[in-house]
Length: 207
Length: 207
DNA sequence: TATTACATGTAAGGGGTTACATGATTTA
DNA sequence: TAAATCATGTAACCCCTTACATGTAATA
Image (cartoon, rainbow over all chains, first blue to last red; front, side, top):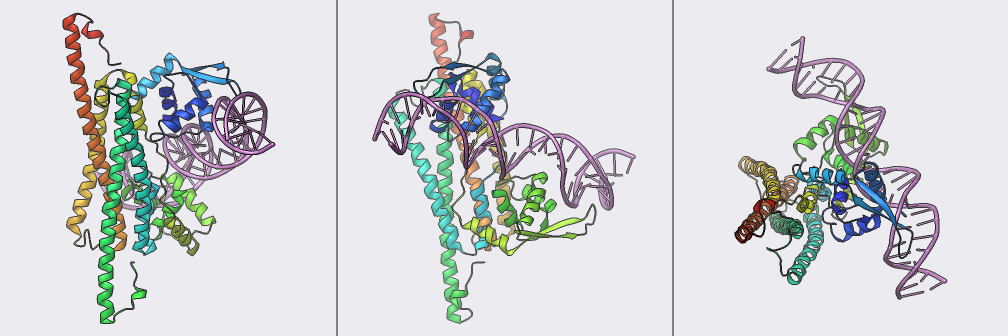
């Protein structure tokens, strides 16, 4: 039930479901994702539970906004969650699963292509977060050691992204090096076999 | 629909649902988790889809086993998945979300305790995987550069775990250092304020 | 005039968890 | 004899996604 608590956390300032969706997309997309169709009913449920209360507010354009704020009971629930042990979920890594079974394709060049694509995606994310940290460092004279407590905690989460993404890219590079070394060795083995006339090179397979 | 494809991948050898559960728990727990109550209906659905076929087989103890094997259509579906781009899902990191909001507790000592617990859990996992690699290196003379292709791909996934977990522990250590530096600075600030008689030290708060 | 942004929702369905039901065989 | 392991499944429920429904106001 992490979404419940994340909404409580975000509602330190009053906000509508629409506002919260924007916060998910702009500020915590590297931590948690949520769709509007999930946010709206969840807010309603949290209000029934008395962790939130809401009021109607006018909007400049579009229908009336429903603005939520946290109750004392909600804040207690939030604190209980924050004081509970680190909530590490089970691993579910689809791209790693693809790699695990990729010998099935019997073609190392495909594994190499997989890693090149993966590296592209991850290093794009890494660059985005590096830029973010860079701008923050330039714009905020308190960065990084004299930040207010809320910003300090956010900085720690940002640093997690940097550490993880760097490690991910390094793993891609290490893997690509191993793959290339293997490919070279295969070619050399093919060469030896072809010279001896044991096997035709085009029937050579990785499996 | 990753579970479908993971089951196809595991069924390179024929196996029962019960067997597959054991493989999930013993060999790919760091990649994907699945419960028996999910595995059984999924296998049935994949058989209806003609990606698997099954036969009944006797068991030494307990009821008859239903042993599944992959069909040609199943293998084609598996290959399509393996050749598709790296399937990177959206982030959903509950422990990072806890940290993001933890300034709410207004007590850096609690953030420090959080990181100590997190570090314990992650470094235990890291040690487990390091031991795994160590035993493999000792037992298998082909390790790491002359492994058969299937083992080579599995090694790459194992290396991912090592890179990720090391980065995670390093981030914990970096964060703990930052937290301790902040705590020291707060103490010093308290001392200055107390000497000047501005505020009583027990009412000093992080927020 | 068409698109985008604002704003709130419902419906259907897939993915996953926990709990329950059943029963045989081996081991402590 | 009790517990663990083998073995297959169903039911209820939660979490989340995609698609649909509705309508206003500003902008291109």
